[in-house]
Amino acid sequence: VPDSSFRIISTRYRLELLPADRAVRGTDTLGIRLLGPQTGRVRFRLFPFYRVTGAWVDGRSARFSVEADQLVVEGTGRDSATLVLEYAGRINMGSDFARIDAERAVFHEEGALPTGLYELSYVRGSIVVPRGWEAVTVGELLAREERNDSVTFVWESRDRLASVGWIC
Image: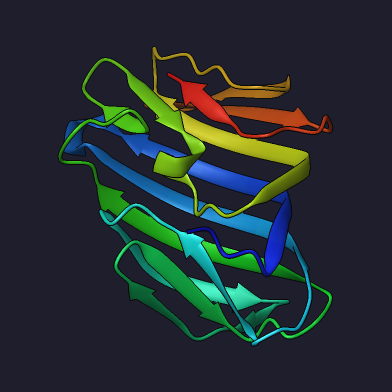
């Protein structure tokens, strides 16, 4: 059951796909609007193959814990907050939300990002894929930068979105 005490209103993410290891590394900066009485904590759904390596609320290190497929972040007792979450993991199986292999990857936000109830009005994302791959998602392509062994795509949308996903 999604945490109804907040809404995700913006996300700025960076995902690095490592198909040889069937792995993903991510950093997500979430703008959230808090609703009703607050407990000082919020819960996100996060695929269980991810390990969270850091959490910050409004620039300060935050306590966090993982309970089943829920990431609990503490220290959010205001009307709004900016959370930064870092995580990584290996995807050992495919699902409808996350699939990666040596030739392609498909992700819905539930398989790539910490999720909650969305009222997105701004999304900016960077996707780093192996050289020779392409990446497609919603919004306008702002940049495509090639490096020795990878390509970074930067996308942005200011439209109201119910969800995001990627095909690489």
